[in-house]
Amino acid sequence: MIAKIKDFVPMHTFDCGQCFRWEKQPDGSYIGVANSQVVRISAEGDTVTIDGCSHDDYESFWKRYLDADRDYSLIKNELTVNETMKNAIEFGNGIRILRQDFFEALISFIISQRSSIPKIKSCVEKLCRHCGEEILFEGKTYYSFPTAQRIAALSEEDIRTLGVGYRAPYILRAAQAVSEGDIDTDFLEKADTSAAREKLLSLHGVGDKVCDCVLLFSLGKYDLFPSDVWIKRVMAEEFETNDAKTSGESLFKNYSGFAQQYLFYWRKYNNA
Image 1 (tube, rainbow, N blue to C red):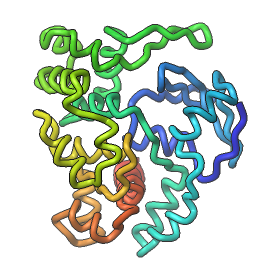
Image 2 (cartoon, one colour):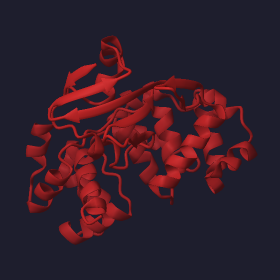
Image 3 (tube, rainbow, N blue to C red):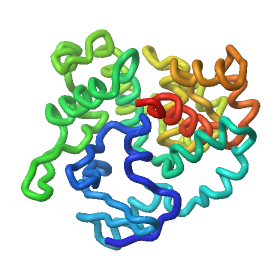
Image 4 (tube, one colour):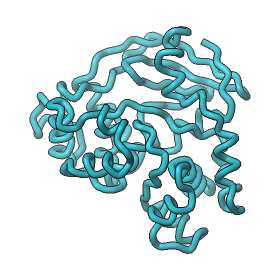
């Protein structure tokens, strides 16, 4: 499948901390799993090649997942409020915010607490291998992300053996809440950001940063500005504020989530 998508660089999008199931290949392409599908994505300019994806698959899922219809040039213009933002946008010019599955994002970001990206990826992969469905792609076996029902049926000890440590009960309770309907994706998507945050924060083990990441990266709550150590540093250094979240959301408003990604990627990887 060949698509035309402007402002998309796979490395920027898949390695900016918003997702954990994409891996860079020796040829520079990325293989990832989403919606129980495995694809290989590469890009040259605005031409994006998606191997393993039919036209119908692209129209029904991957176009929305990649946020392909959004004009990021308009967003970049709105966000270029100073030299810092100009530099951050230039550095991560190919970032697009993915529309990931809500439950996958919820469990992945619960796992992400106080952890490195390689460790998060490892734990997520172990969870998928433990109770996901096998998918064959290019002669290799991959695994879908487990359903809430599958994880809810596990014991806390089952989950703990996957290397998630103290997060095991949080993962189990989140899966139970989603499988039982206590956490409803449709409600969260339709609700305003404040109401969605209040509901998601009611889950034990979900704090401000996890909540904001889940709502931003799965349900398109773009007025959120998730704040972690990297964002706190860049906001303190470049914007002279010790309240990164409030200041970011006040300054960038409905484009806060996009600004956060450009700033995070620039601050974390610019000197790597």
